[in-house]
Image 1 (cartoon, rainbow, N blue to C red):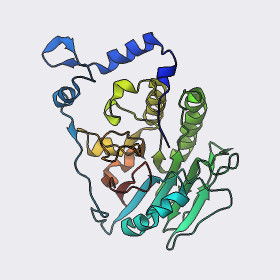
Image 2 (image 1 turned 60 degrees about the horizontal axis):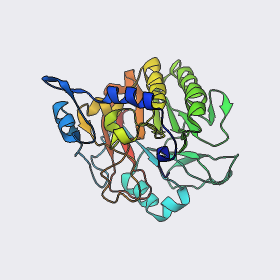
Image 3 (image 1 turned 45 degrees about the vertical axis):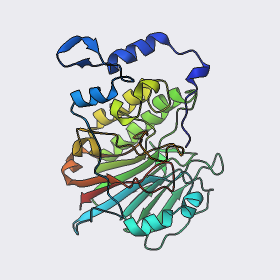
Image 4 (image 1 turned 180 degrees about the horizontal axis):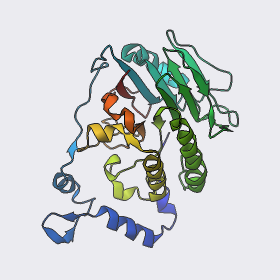
Length: 319
């Protein structure tokens, strides 16, 4: 999905921006009277806070999965049909995930493509043709499947939940707040609330893995040039606070943050114009119940895959 901000065409709340700036302008070590200017002093900020650029990318499906592990991938394909023409099928064969969670399929209701070796489940938008949509491809047939969120039908097909013996897997394509933030209130007060309740009910029964395109960069290091994104969809304080509340309330853990606590620039979304894939957003996640954290052995992205404006994100988790 194309991401842009229309802040230049509308007056921003100056007081709110001042508050945001105070949050991000951390003081330099030993210089209490000098604050960081993120735009001008970005490199020094990361050095002083011990963050390093993420360089541990793998190609062609590395690292290899152990026999006692399950490989789960999540990928916003920005159109199933278009991605198939750009190498999605080849990626599936090469990476060979046990489970693949797909977002933004843009398929019409009733269109359910089959992939050899997988049980395929699609949830399409019934309110708008060729919009949103999710899918789960699983080698093992799930015990149960639901396309509802908190007991409610989702007219845009933004969620699929499947049940396995030891956990629930929730694949979601979280609604975008809009270029002018016209959907911000609905996203944070309705969607996020329903998701919170949905996950809460699942956790009463089993551990949960929540993945997909969450359309939010949670931390300052999860987006390039954060000071220019303060009122952009996906980086507002309302979205970050709401998603963080869900994680805290349900004791869910960000697997990347646990595995690489001092790494930055692990982006999963890039503008099509950014051919070098250097200035992006981290919008795709694997959150897991606290009891599952130690079972996650690997998390990596396939940055070289270009079937979409997102890149695939993969975890290995012990059975």
